[in-house]
Image (cartoon, rainbow, N blue to C red; front, side):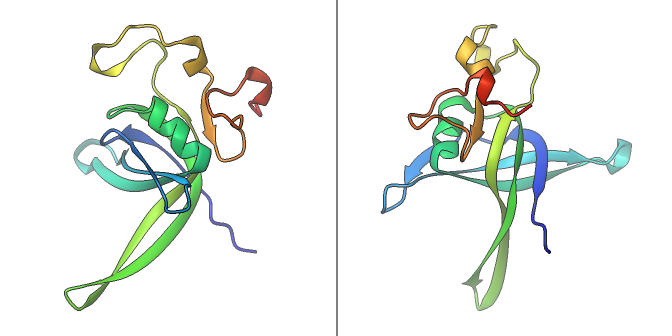
Length: 142
């Protein structure tokens, strides 16, 4: 049996923009800055994230540049031709996401307190109510 599972924590490199496919499915893409190493060996890896469906809608509603999040999902590769060479692009298709920064801090000088609904948002392909928004405490599996 093969396993394709990825879990990352990092900061968003820009605001998420929500789009729709020709068939009306919500999709959003963004890069996540993930730091690794220590001291002089510290580096930042930029990982492309793809959100689909309700996860894309909730991510676009709540996530902004600089926000620290945790994501889990699967790796996906695509190939295309550029200047006669085959280029392979690897991204993470996000299945679940949650906030990972400290409670009470906001980017861009917004109010210090988050709305109560934002504290419980867990973006997931299957865990959000059909209308989007926040998942209740009973919906969180831990």
